[in-house]
Length: 207
Image 1 (spheres, one colour):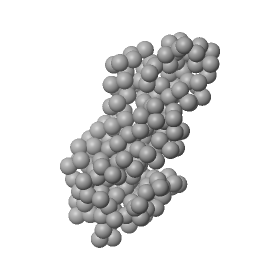
Image 2 (cartoon, one colour):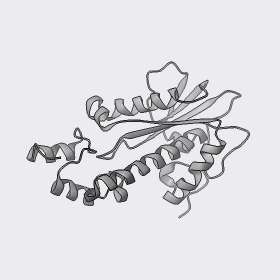
Image 3 (tube, rainbow, N blue to C red):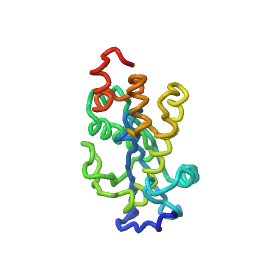
Image 4 (tube, rainbow, N blue to C red):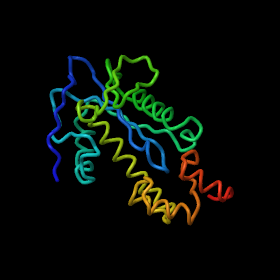
């Protein structure tokens, strides 16, 4: 089913450089958490932008090169599995967001961040719940982050083919949990996450 056109209710221009920031990969049991920051060109709106979760894989892949070509600036960054386990997933997500904004070739005047919390940074910013449905630049960032992370999981699938990463992208599906119990954690698994930690408790040498 084709998603309804998004209704962006927050101003995404204001004559300043406005960045949108979003992440992908907070919930999965494996792989890094990825964040993207995008500054769109108000003179060149991109048709079809929406929360990445409401788009099909084909729609996201089609929009990715358009965003890259049409945005005034964009950057993608990540926090690693080791950082997630050491810091916790929230702090690792905020770190990835901070890295993405720092990597922008144009520094923004204002930032909209998807969710209910902004990183502790020097930028003027606002957290927006469901921002990927309300701010065009956040929707664009959600697409870049999601596509980048999905591609990473496809690569992890080639390294660790027994887990089905290309299919479930690291989320705790029954297929994934069965493979985790049968094979033990891979180096790509987040050991601080409960299903992985439970397997390790049963077999501390696993992975």
